Length: 296
Image: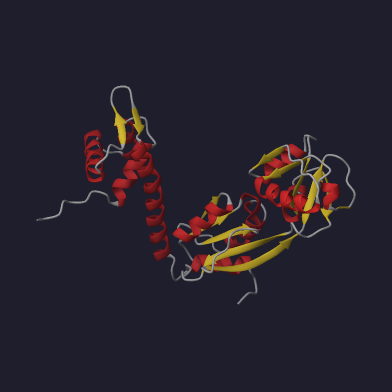
């Protein structure tokens, strides 16, 4: 028996993504410059292949079902991988063109990455750079599934034998406050203040406080360092961030007082991470050389 023809090619998934992000098939058809009937037929064929309804559609509703939400998330990833495969093939041997996909934590995107990209784009103006910002676990997932070539992350994170890691620099921790601070602070002094912390640093300081018999007061906790800085500027508490991030914000006009944390237990490293078993494109190799000048 001849197997049924499969409709789920990348083009079909691209069309489904547009439909999922639209308010009707007709709106999606206009975005794609295709006939509405052809797009409806393509959606029906995809649903038949999956054996489920992906989009509820009637006179009042046009929305993803639970199955449709799963398909949408997977379709985005498949299309990203397909695009990355094409870009890798085009840029495999020369950094004169192609695409570089970089996963980076937000605090490094506006610091290390900004400075590196200034040099990289001057040397390789024809390379398209795609930057993906997220929490470290999500960045490493992008590295592992192939949608990103390299990742710029801060320690601590869960490592893997599959990673090749290079240290870019080490970072002391700095305490910032709207109130005047001494030049250095120890943990006892730090933990005596109400703190605004990222979730990661909350966990680190909670362990230190418990071990030293101190109490952590962190009435405000959030995801991003930039948010901690903005809230510290209101005077509702102090915050703790890496020195390089502080230096970056200071040169853009931040006026908070600062003190170095005298104990190095919370110090962090900025690292370039790639996979050992994956051949980097020429653009990615050139980027690594820019991040790590002089490393052979």
